[in-house]
Every structure is written in C-alpha cells, then in structure tokens.
Image 1: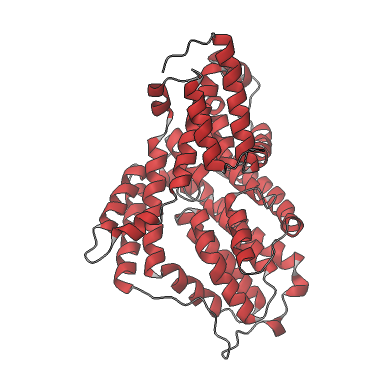
Image 2: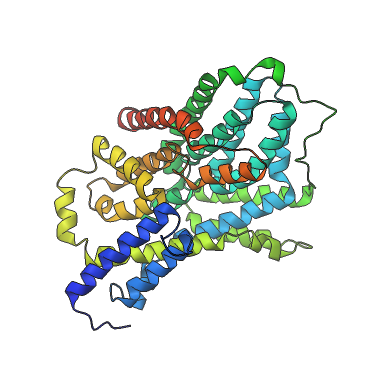
Length: 418
C-alpha cells in the first residue's frame, strides 16, 4: 500500500500508533474498546501499514519468524508433555513427598523454576497453579506464600535459557547468542534467584509455615490426579531432550524446536489436533503485531542519527542498562521493552553482553508487581478460579525485595564473575 500522506504526517501518525499500542499492551486493553493485548497489537500493526509507516513487504520482513517458530515448537512440546500427564506426575510426586511446610515451599520453587528454565514459563504457570493449589489445600497450609513462590520462581527460573520465556526467545533470535552461552551465563544467576525466592517467602510468611499444619491427610486426597500416558510421555521427554542437545550442539533453536514438534506430531495413534489446539495462537499474533509496530516506529522516528546520539550516552553500562530495562519492563511489559531497546543495543560495541543484561533485568523485573509479568497474572487468575485471592499488596510485599536483590545479584554476577 502506497500512502499519499506527507512524510511529516506519517511521522506523527507512527508515533501516535506506537504510543497507543504500547499503552494498550501495558494496560491489557484500550480505554473505550473491547480489545485485549492481542487485538491492540494486531490493530497497531495494521494501522502502521495503513498510515505508510511501513509498506506491506517491509511489515512482513519486520516479523521475526525465528521467534514465532521457536515459540510454536515449544508450545507443541509443552502441550505434548501436558497431555501425557508429565506435569501432574512431576508436581504431585515432588510436593506430596514434602512433609514440612518449608520442604513444600522448596519443592514449589524448584519444580516451578526448573521446568520454567526448559519450557516457556507462562505455560508452566498455567499447568502448575491448580496442581499446587490442590496439594497445599489438602495439606491444610495457607496457599498465599506458595502461589507467590510459584509465580516468582517461574520468572526467576525462566531467565536460565533462551526458551525460558518470550522475551528471552526474542533476545536469542535478535542477538544470535548461542543456547549454550546464554545458559552458561544466566543459569547460575537463576539458581541464586531461586534461593532468594525461597528465603524471602519463608521469612515474610514464617508465621504461616508451621510444621503442625503440613502433613497431607490420607483421608482427603488431592484432586490433581489425571491420566498418565507413559508411552507418549517417554517420547515427549525424548523430543525435549533432543531439542536441548541440538541447541547445545549449535543448531538454531527455532529449527530444533520445529523439528522436535513435527516428530512429536508423528506419533502413531496420537491425534495432532489437541496438541495444535494447545498453541497460544493469540500470543503469536500479538508478537507479530508488536514486531511491525516497533519496526514502523524505528523507520519513521528512531533514525540512525538518534541511535548514534543515544549510544554516545553509554546505555550499555550496567548502571544504566539494568535499571532502564527494569523500569521500562514495568511500564510497558518485558516483551515490548526488549523490542524498544533493540536498535540501541545493536549499536553498542559489545551487544551480546548487553543483550544478556537485558534478558536478566527484563525477566527479574517481572517480579516487582502482580502486573509485572504474564506469569504472575496467570497464577492470580487460575487461583481466583479456585476461590483464592492473590492480591496486589500481597504480591508487592515479596516482589519488591525479590526484584531489587535479584537485580543487584544478577548485575554483580555478570560484571565481576561472568
């Protein structure tokens, strides 16, 4: 589509579309319209093309299909594990063996953190929240600290690998950092963060974590049981392992994920429709829309001269980059924040190191408030469906110290140790 609008008008419209799109993504809706984040991003991308901010070909080129493909493959693998009963088996097995409230808390943190390091953390929260609630309620313990630990640990653990969360997937694609280097740098940071989550929640809710409350009563079984398909589970675990091995061997994560997902679908007797239905297509569409909106903004406004000027302010310094990323992530959410930072990081002398800093800060910043990450909201909404309220103030009580301390620890690790 060729626009007849003057360049100055296109410039202004690109800014307005960008700001309204990011406002809608940050709020989860646009005031006056019944649109969710996906709808807002889709409309923003279409309007960016319509106003002349990008041509249709430029818009298609702006969509990072490596990111889309990696997310798609991981979602199919996660759906396979879920259908096989893997999450139910692992979660119930770990939590039911915890006979002390602190052991139960540790189990929640470890299971959530480790699984989120391998698979996308949003998926882990969708699956684990009802399972954790079943077990802690059957145990007679207060659910609040365990729900907060689940959300915070899923965020922290997801920083460990490229496939841990959506923003890492985008960073991995934009930066070209290998799966092995990403994990070698950030997995130790994730481990420190998980210890911090456990210690913080245990300290803040020590009055609710009493031994007398814990033992799961045999006369009141938890309701988390489900059918276990062992053959399907073995193949799904094998495909996930092959995916990780391929990534460590240098295969592009997007390629490895698509191949593993395709092999998973090629299972005799397995209907592929339920696995494909497990893909969050709205999330993929939202990403495509955001890619286009950001590209339009960059083309119309963020010129090479502006990028060069901002780069001269040394945004790559940890003292600047980490707080900037954390603040931006809490204003517009972590995925949009990463996309906004793209042109400035690319202009730095050492972009790989800066991207790893951004991955750490954007992910850890998600623990600041209940609205800080999609994973937090998933836990809150799933808990609400079971009649359990996870309030903003309750989450903030733990979120502030976890976020601030984890950001400091992560920065120190990457500056002095890595």
